[in-house]
Amino acid sequence: MEYLVSLLIVIGATFTFIGSLGLVRLRDFFTRLHGPTKATTLGVGCILIASAVYFSHREAGISLHEVLVTLFLFITAPVSAHLLARAGMHLNLEMKKGPDGSERD
Image: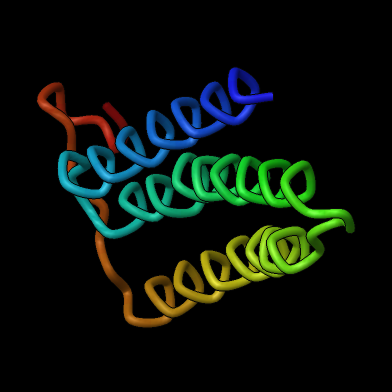
């Protein structure tokens, strides 16, 4: 059981770190949305599932608090990213051009 929880925590921390790097390293507003909404959501979800598995195994009942937080996270993160992207489009934010002059890297 400890190996499963440890594996989920390491996977979650890795995805969270990659999402944080994406937030720092990507060029403009629209590409920065991918870091927190994709990788970080999966990373925090893995950590919450690891917590649910640990406390369900440690105590007699099933730990549903973490599962509910995970479901809430998976439902609200794409919706908030969509609303942020729409707000960016409404404000006419421009995408930065790549080194070859294209819109994408």
